[in-house]
Length: 38
Image (cartoon, rainbow, N blue to C red; front, side, top):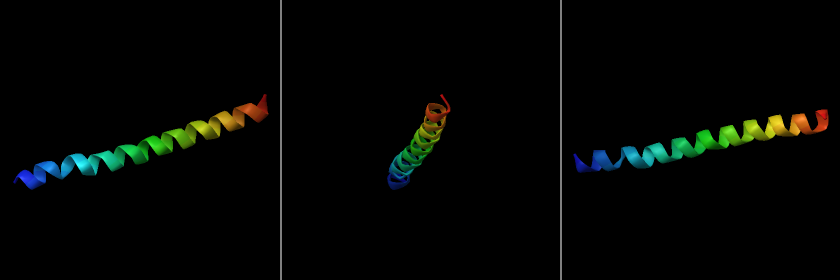
């Protein structure tokens, strides 16, 4: 049972990193598109 409790945390960390990467890429795309537009 203790192993299952320790498994959720590590599985959640990678998911958060992937989400942050997508947000950063989306933000960079908007910034790059706004820069040349100016």
